[in-house]
Length: 418
Image 1 (cartoon, rainbow, N blue to C red):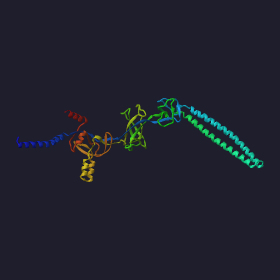
Image 2 (spheres, one colour; image 1 turned 60 degrees about the vertical axis):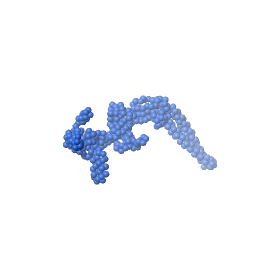
Image 3 (cartoon, rainbow, N blue to C red; image 1 turned 90 degrees about the vertical axis):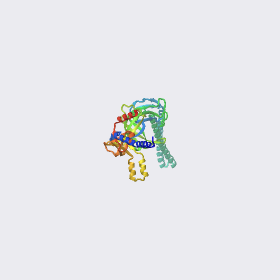
Image 4 (cartoon, rainbow, N blue to C red; image 1 turned 90 degrees about the horizontal axis):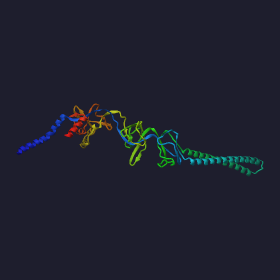
């Protein structure tokens, strides 16, 4: 092959390399890029905060002893339904009955002493009256009169002291009766016995610590159920009373129990380096679900009111990288040019007359499915939602052909088979 022919052939190859991409792109444009499209419409966008916690009955009361004594009788069993004021348990009353007998004897002795001192007082009063008459007739000296007066005052003081002592003995006796009454454990409310850790013969002790004998039983109102959630300090500012919550118990992970935020703790709980706030949620009736206090659960706390607003699927929203903004800033472009580049960072592709058009949008709240759009779109716009790879490679004005998700999947499978 002559040098001249080699040069011609090389030039033809270079031309083919340069022309072929444009030819292929022209052919592809004529066909149009297959895309999936969805019309813009009002959707209920409900962003959520994820939290975890445990279930609890609406009202739970831990019964503890107020006196130290052995358990004498237990009159209920775990799971029993009880009424307010019902006798549930008795503690050994022997020690407190002995105290009552002892204090009763002391009170009777005090009453006897008061009777004797009252008689002594009457005697001193009569004696002092006689001394006053005799002194007036000068039959006794002034010293004898003074002695009788002092004896009268002493009798009065001893009677007052004994009266005070009797009051003290009555108070001690009343306390002894009160202590005896505390050996009978009664239900403070109607409900069900959900925990009964103590047994007959064990010693009950008055303590709030987790010691053996400190807790007698737990009564709960099982008709109402709540969830006690831990919300991270970064999210607690978005939670308010009355917000809707869906709770998923661990025993029924796919079943949501609806509820509302009832109470938000003002002080955090600290676990290691993490801080969280306790949020109490009142739950609707669980129906036939067999739920118990203490079950773990996860929850979605819904933000906002969930009113419909213009929204697109989250996968339709594309974010540019920062190259355009950096280029504008590096070129010392005017501020409005930089702002324009920044605004165009978030956009969607819209099918208009068979061609892809890049539309900058201002987004609002979003959830797992929908992205609210504040500006840039109107109801009915045909937004391109996929395929994801196509969204990243589209160019302004590219021809597009709408396909269903099944058609796109079938085309993908066919291409893979080839």
